[in-house]
Length: 450
Image (cartoon, rainbow, N blue to C red):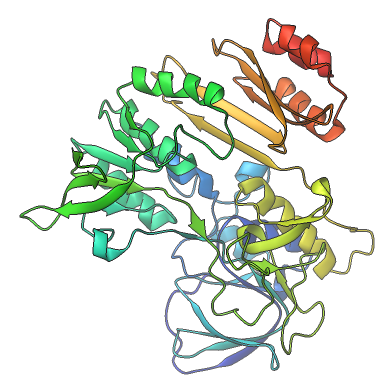
């Protein structure tokens, strides 16, 4: 039952499984629990006012000028091939849902979480922390909170940005990663010619080489985007009306701006669960430290009573010799939720978590687009990178480390070709680099490594 009204008095409700969070991982955890016939044992507490949804849509089809994606169309678990989990679904399966409700305190010893709804608290046998990450914000001292400055983390953020986009005549995007590029594409598709400011020498610097990035930058520039590379924002200036008026760069450049989108990364904020163990370096990767079942630990935490899933979880990546990582990606949100649910529900055959790092993006997908972009990457960004193809439309890239292909990327691939890329990354075949370089097409390169 979705409940957005405050209770009449503070209460303590005992539930077997409590999920805190309402994003991708929370929705897919609910899906797994319901599939096991245990929906009535589950309570979900979400700070958002809407049921769990496929969050990546917020900076993709959600921002389309014509026919934008809207709820209930992309509630979980439609992105993963499952049912649309609308209100009727939760009701029919006995899942209790509290929306617009924030957990403000946690007592590990008494196994209780307390909310901001008249102090209502919930006891649990199993607690699942699925709070995701927060969008990093520029400090108020440099104008990061001015009217007209937008961050995209949740449904309300995306709605506010969409409403503002129609009036934007001088949009500036700060950041050259996923959020920055997807927002820039949405502006460009409207003919708004956004300026894109990034500290790095090229877009997607954490994943792409300069050679790969150059193809995408040229496409964006052909659609009116203007890149400011190796640039650092010194301040966001306020106009006479109190709203954003310009973005000031170190070195003196000033970019007129009536709307600013900031996409400079995400932070793993663990409050109010700060007593759970985290990584030795609180920022690298940060988050809540878990084992291969996604069980967390900490002071007064009974073993296997608290779990963390999705973006907030720092887990051992078997694909990379159990290196502790966090993965801010929808595929991991879905997979970690399903894997954790098996262990929470006592599946003796669940085993450890097996996950292949995966990243993707899709832009310029509007009905009138003459060049749709859709790339997928699997594996590790390690070693030498070999690019094959001309980006017309396909481009493939392969990361070769110690003679084996450990990562692979493909632009504009068919579903079968994307599956082949995944198989290559997971199989880590030996690579003759010279033969790979000699491939004339992406298809030939995939065939060579198959």
